[in-house]
Length: 127
Image 1 (tube, helix red, strand yellow):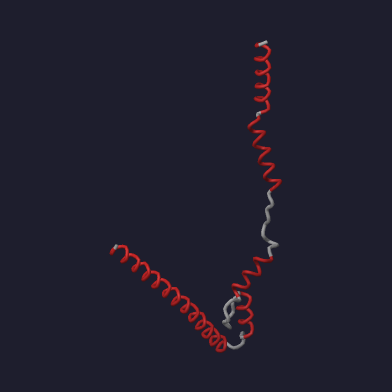
Image 2 (cartoon, rainbow, N blue to C red):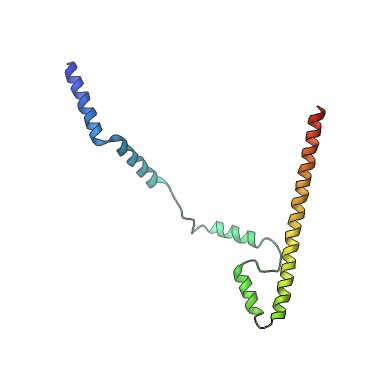
């Protein structure tokens, strides 16, 4: 009886080794994951396109915001370089003003954070 159980277990063991159960299980799991995972390439995500456009159009500046708008503006003033230079100067001024305002706001926030941090450190030292 013990020999029969031993032979049965050894046959099952050799059968499992022959099937290479680990490799088979790995293939099954990977296949399951590939077939059940919903992967989108993102090309049809209209929400993302709309969000990007909103970010680009967020400020009220009259200067071109995209390359297409820049080229359109350049075609409109193609014959008169003086007008083109004047527009470039105005647009550069707007861009610098916009950048400067963002820089000032960032500097104010940083200074405020540094002041708060210094006050907290002073309180910790006194305690």
